[in-house]
Figure 1 (cartoon, rainbow, N blue to C red):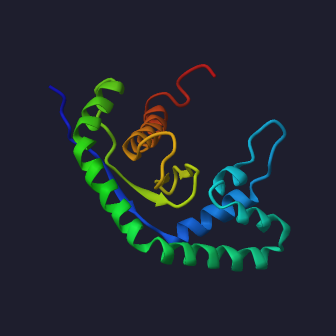
Figure 2: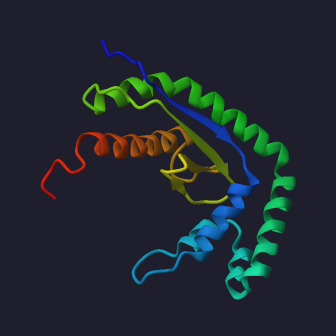
Length: 172
């Protein structure tokens, strides 16, 4: 029997500030030759935002703030529903996920970590290992929200497992 001493906790949230930071993050990210344009993918549902590239940063920030504030007002009721469903759906699979994840990591104790899953109005899966958050598009195109949550948690868990068990111990 697998002992589940430590667990991973996920809190689902909405955050206008995270939305604004995500827009800025991808807007500032350079497009490298041969790679997808991350900003264009981010705003694929809102092509009017592509014009941000033509503006100076001060005007970009104004437009970003205005867009996110307006979109959150417009989607207020639906965002609440989406958030409630994400929480409910995650609660139905989280125990099974934790069991299966522990098996993947050689029955090692899973780290006691808390992560924030931000439902986002945009179409990108931004994450930050140091700040322990990831974004899940509320209108997920490829997978359901649980699938994306599991995917991101496995990334975080793998990096922690690697660091604790292998970093500096293998010939690189």
